[in-house]
Image 1 (cartoon, rainbow, N blue to C red):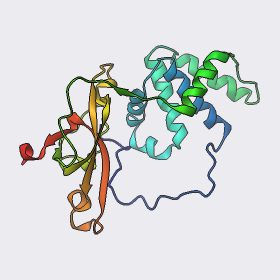
Image 2: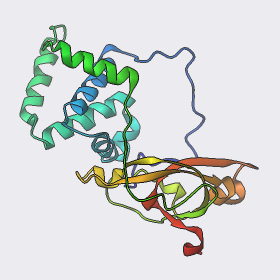
Image 3: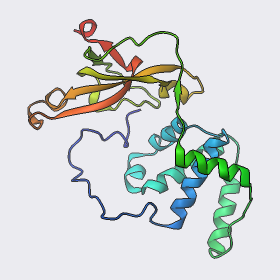
Image 4: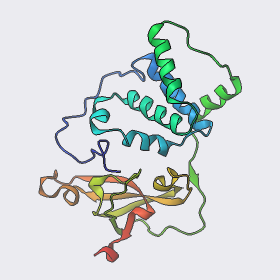
Length: 228
């Protein structure tokens, strides 16, 4: 969807400030919300695409003013209520409880086997690729046009690359299409690294010899000759 999160390719936000020796987490609650997100996903409560859609559904003002992990909390709360894991009343009750006694010990539910599993996934990762029967529709060197679409729900194709001409740089394995996965439909598609010239994206204002590489799913693309 088009929203406050879709800022790629836009001007006016200033340089990206990189903090020297930046800590992984700025506060303990950030570590906890990271762990909570991992646990809900590994238990099958939500998917990464559902979380991303939750972030994208925030109002632009809320999205731009919230910190990184504040966004995670807001998206997760929304999902847990929508999926009836928690109710809004239960959330409000916990808010009040901790506000009244912020130094109270947090509840603990030890599950050593699950903790070991989650730790292994975080440290080693896991392939999200899927097997598909049909071959890729494109190969390296093919000219393609990105579809000029504006979906109302989650998509992984940024607004600034839509309707642009590019070249297939690399063909990856097939992965679940996020646009459908967020609705519960699993449709694997090949993913491609697409090279787009800066002037194709930003015209004469682009830096000389600039180029952007972006990974896009097959259904985001049209053959160059078809779109001409």
